[in-house]
Length: 129
Image 1 (tube, rainbow, N blue to C red):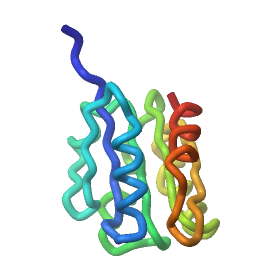
Image 2: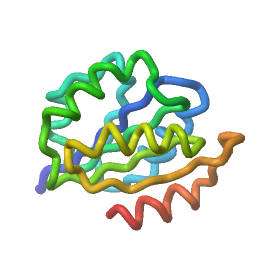
Image 3: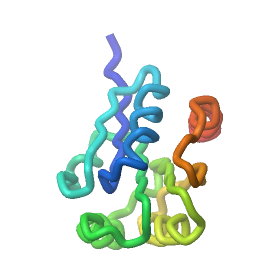
Image 4: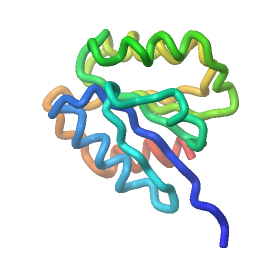
């Protein structure tokens, strides 16, 4: 029996981002998915993940300080990363975090109301996979 593929979803823990994190987890059939709030994230959480996601409500959440630092010093060139948020300013911030790691980045701008459809998430994931 083959080992399950693993994915990691790192979030700021806000109520507006958590539903999307859960939709991502639910839609990743065949993956063992861990949803991790940024304050609980450790660098070794990335080791088993072939795919990872980062989502936050606003730029520079306090609990992203470690994440920002780590991504400046780690090479993730062979990994795919999905970033998700509700506005362009936050999307720019997330792009900046991932840039130095060289992960292949896929972006999803959520609806401002936080009611991003399941089908939108599934289409985005199909592009990533």
